[in-house]
Image 1 (cartoon, rainbow, N blue to C red):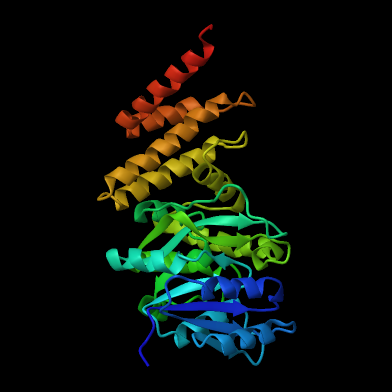
Image 2 (cartoon, helix red, strand yellow; image 1 turned 90 degrees about the horizontal axis):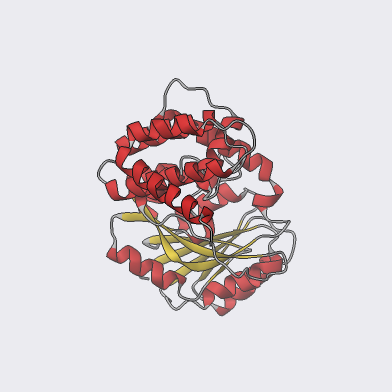
Length: 344
């Protein structure tokens, strides 16, 4: 039997509510050369029956039953070891893939062989399964993704397609029960390039029983340790705590400033960006875009009147470090402010 192009890997634990539709979304893919590895992680609901019923109807479905609950991380590694496809597509039992997801991701990967980790934008569904009016994007280029992954997850897990050979030698860390994907992306990006398609190809469920919501605090605690290691790889001999990392995440992951940003956090962000930029010199276009975003964010923070905000010393630091970009942003900022104050 010839190996399929894609192996879709899903682990299910008591996922009967959305499982039928999740499986159907893969069954209806326009790209048909795939196998679907469906792992039941010792469910106590109707999930096993749903999986085996589908396996009778679609020969591409490979049902796998765990004798006892292994947890998501170990189950995913089991699925990767069983996979035969060139690429592995991830899916969760409460998320849905749009019909052309596999087709468009395979097409991109064939045309961009340097990419071994590919995601997409996503629609978000509420607890009732109603899709929001707007979709959510992640950074699309490798350099943007490498900047994002220091302090945040640059991929929607269920949107990801990854190189199977790389996944075999870089499996999920089985010591991490939640947020295992965030840790894995950092290792993947050291050995291959990452990308996200700007088009939404998945619908992600957001309901109270979702693992990432049930274990939000544990997931953040584990993620915090990962962030500390990544920060330390860029900036040595600096102490990192939860408060400063949270402030830095607000600065680097949001388009709009908040009243709670501190000069201490901004100074750390600027040091981090300087170190990151020096390590990614070939992609000056993207480095310039990230720099412009930070400058714009800092200038917008001038709008907050609350409390002492030592923004001008930071602007001075930026002007010294990045004179051309900063002066360009300053010109546009004051031009906009003057226009808004001009009498009609």
